[in-house]
Length: 287
Ligand SMILES: [Cu+2]
Image 1: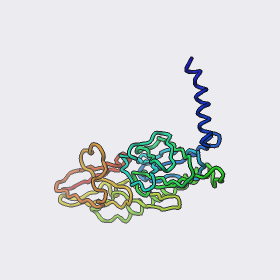
Image 2: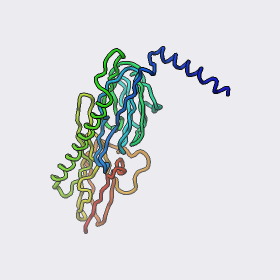
Image 3: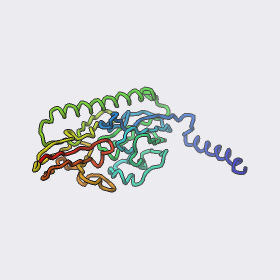
Image 4: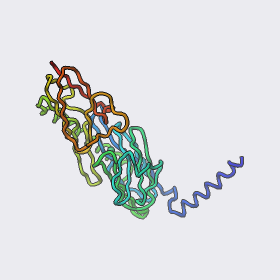
């Protein structure tokens, strides 16, 4: 009973503090946005914040919903902060909801479809949003003073997010299809195709998480060459048991990988980073 009696006092005290800071909840608006998008088979991945540009008022909050099985982070760095490794975070990870005013780094750990994260923006400014997993995945949040008028409402952003999503995913479909039809070298496999789009708000990428020619047939003694044509997303070519722990490739700059198969047999392989998205293949070696 004693506890119940204390609660109203605490709430009143908190309200006074918030009002003094000009963060009265009556003015604060809730905005919604999305991180990532994917095709139904998960093979085409939009590496994008949707929408990639939002205008809000100081004190407002934005909740981002993750919508892809490919992992992403939601990260606001401080000025001049070097881009950290995604598993290290700021270092460390922010608790939900986080507050960002440019003075302290805010980041989520890598997150996937269904998870959400909210950031409150108490002060005016232009804040860049990045994903620590994918270079070239950026957006911007413009925080206006309360006196300024916002250019758009939530319905506008919902519509824009949907059209950016559709544009990226249909791009991915076209790239994959176009590439496969001209893929006439019998011993070559393309591990990943991607295209970066730079826009006013940020840059987005669509990545095709599939091996072209994924059931390649060769003869014993021949060589298969994999190349990665994706400028943003690394891939691995992994035969045998999936490595335990962090599957990041030891050298992301390697874009070509050759294996010679001396013996006949069927050799399944995966991309250790994206096998859960269906990025798998087989080399069938005939005698
Ligand atoms: Cu990402």
